[in-house]
Length: 250
Image (tube, rainbow, N blue to C red; front, top):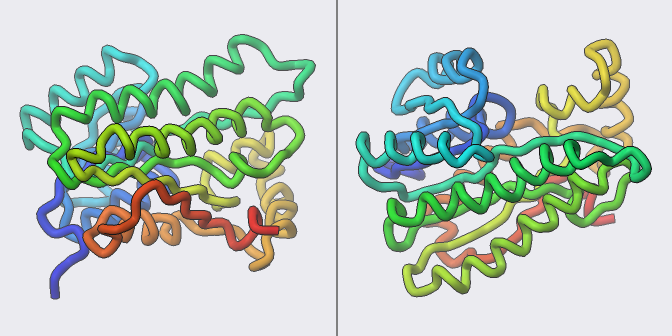
């Protein structure tokens, strides 16, 4: 039986945990060779060991131009091309309007917006014609929530990057799509609870906002990303796929 991504070469930023790790595992199991990036060398090593095959971990921060250069130089040397880019690396922090600092703004926008822009830009020379680019936005791009204004604005920017890029890349038939996950049970989301002791109660609050009555799991997001990267989604372009249990739809 033909696997979904047989023979494809993929890059997943933020691939050492959560949605990125689940997607890297899914891609590898569907026949892709996967490069994953992340800032934490220990987490990257564990992720590489967990996936176990057809994966290479490249340490680096997508907001750091020197790190991006090293990442893409390594991809060029090892495989020479990319068929899929999943620009998934993200920073999530909260701050009420009166407490927003320049440091908070830069931490969020540097990773979520700057990192996405220059990851994709740097990938362009390696991308095959007909490649698939998938960007990670969030239900927060269309939902207001106290304390999330900077994060939400960064994710709204992601949505419009896709709308513009698909026009710029149309002559190469490169598709650019967006996923907007809802509340997903990841370590990163749990960190917003403030402390490990608060994670369970925090997740319970989030569950109450989801029409399906539960949080999403990373493997559920990964399954959608794998389809969007595949030939089965060959006529999908500029889409924003809400994977949120219905939360952003009400």
